[in-house]
Length: 112
Image 1 (cartoon, rainbow, N blue to C red):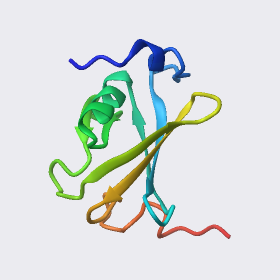
Image 2 (tube, one colour):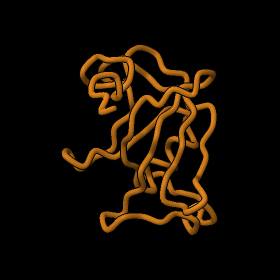
Image 3 (cartoon, helix red, strand yellow):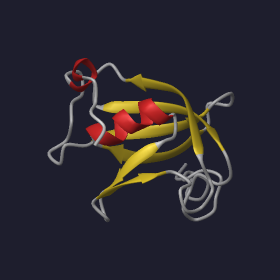
Image 4 (cartoon, rainbow, N blue to C red):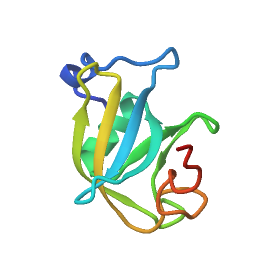
């Protein structure tokens, strides 16, 4: 198990399940690709490997983006918001970011 740097861990504000919201944004365009969740281990692995690693709430396990689909996220920057409750990943996206096959998870339902 990979351990998160204690200085970084101390800055995180996790939800009741010990998770922090993570937003993936395309490098260069700023396009928001997807939103997922991270626990401390997922963040530590992301920082170590530069591959976006998330925590699946439905499967209760870690998953590396693109591990099965090939639609990877090479992480170029990791930022923490001012409240410590959201992580921004600036990534180079290969293929679709959304599990539906769309480039982003925000392509379909424009409310306004």
